[in-house]
Amino acid sequence: MGCGASMYPLGGREKKSVPEVVVYVPSMRIPAHSDLQRPLRGLIPQDLADRLACLRNQIVLVAEDTGGSAVTELRRALEEYLSLLIGLTKKEHGLEGLVEFKWKNLESGRQENSVANSWFELLSVIHMIAMLTLSEANTLMIPKDRSGSGIRVVSSDCKRDAVDLLLKASGCLVFCVREILAHLPPDIKKTFSKDFQDGVLEAISIQALGQGTEIQLGFAVESQKASLSVKRRLACEQLIYFSQAYHFLSGLDMSNGHGKKHLCFIKWKFLEAKAAAYYYHGLILDKGTEPACHVSAVCCFLAAGGLLSESKKACLTFCLTAPVTRSPPLWGAMKHLHQKIPEVASRKSQMYGYLLEEEKALQALPDLPDFQLSLAPDDYVLPEIDPAWDRDKWGIHSQPLKEHLKDSEDETGT
Image (cartoon, rainbow, N blue to C red; front, side):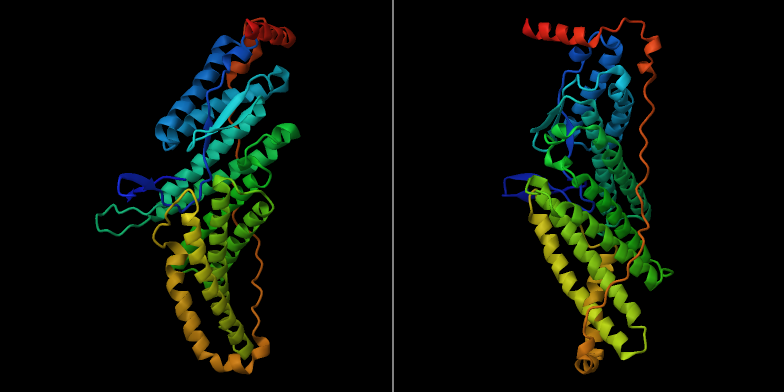
């Protein structure tokens, strides 16, 4: 669930980490030990098979030893492994379905998938890169007290870097959906864990864009140069992103461990974004001179207040839904809005109370404006295929696949 955890005593006996979550990271999947060398024996050079197995084993060991926290080392190993793995997906090599790739859940250690398809392995590796990238963004957004003053802050540089990481993670997931899933037959997709069911990858990708917009809104709120129109636009865009993410998940079975928590997170962020959008929309409407403008503005402020109260409950529900997490101190736009929304809603409803009584027919919540979304995923590009896959340099006589499979069966039987 991300890094940056503080230690709290639970039950009075031992200290367990309860992680803080700013950027939501679904459950991490890591490779489980698989036999790559025997199925490939005689079909590719031995040193190529050894490199594939060695790199995959290295990823397993580092992920297990560090709990996935060694992001830089894992990402480097995964990218190097990808350049070799791509060769297994090439039709001209005829190796797509030879190796059975196993993956497990990092937290529980339970094996989730075992699939004899190299496109599945490619999907799993890029998905792991995306989750590591989200985890790194979460670490950057956890406030830290570096001065010893007791005040925990997140620097502007960390926030900007987190936005970049969110766009990269989103791009990885878009690549998985558009470029890899199409190569996997329906019977294999049916064996996937719920993390890979249709709609989940899309939801996480869009959610990452929503969280990037949330950080940008925080920048706008802190800037004296940002206009109300800019703040309203960012809040409305954030709302659209989380609405789309929820739409992808709403028809799915999200009863698994992290699925329920994932839905709770999106609901929490959706309510926060909607409260912000109505607040800024109300401020703009209140600049009008007609009574109807003030009535509509008050309706917006009151709606924002109600949504803010709901978001606080949704935040608590998210934190208490297993696995238990903590929310960090208020930050960004919500640090400002938790104070301003109740204050403005109370003041404006008192100021225009007489209009609310006189213009009861106008007491309808106005529609929020629609905007074209600004953030887009970064394009993910696969690394170049490793030169070791140049068959002209192999210098071996590749065994025909049928003979290789027969030999493997004979070897298994002995």
